[in-house]
Figure 1 (cartoon, one colour):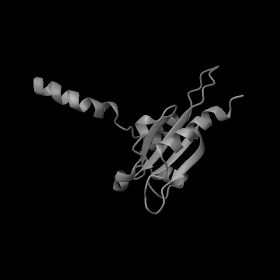
Figure 2: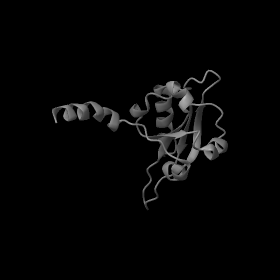
Figure 3: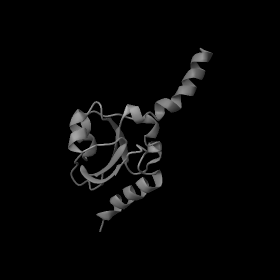
Length: 133
């Protein structure tokens, strides 16, 4: 029992911060806001188009993003999304605001993550305030 508790304690951070992958079938429902009458909150979603072969270059700071939901899409499992959003390299990150593609960051031939947490957070903050009067 003691060993089980120690193991559980050690695994809790991994369980708490595991990255959520989404599939094509749930993509639209994740990027679009749930419409409640009278609600005017802006929904920002960051999607990382990810590939297993290049996992060492994925976006590492996803758990530090504020004011946005963050999901990954495995491009080997979502060829329709890969085609729709013209994903040529992984990782590619796209910021959606209320279901509309606003900003994208595409890896180059070096396949390195194309943005930093600071740049991404700055763009998220700007999108949240851009349409306010």
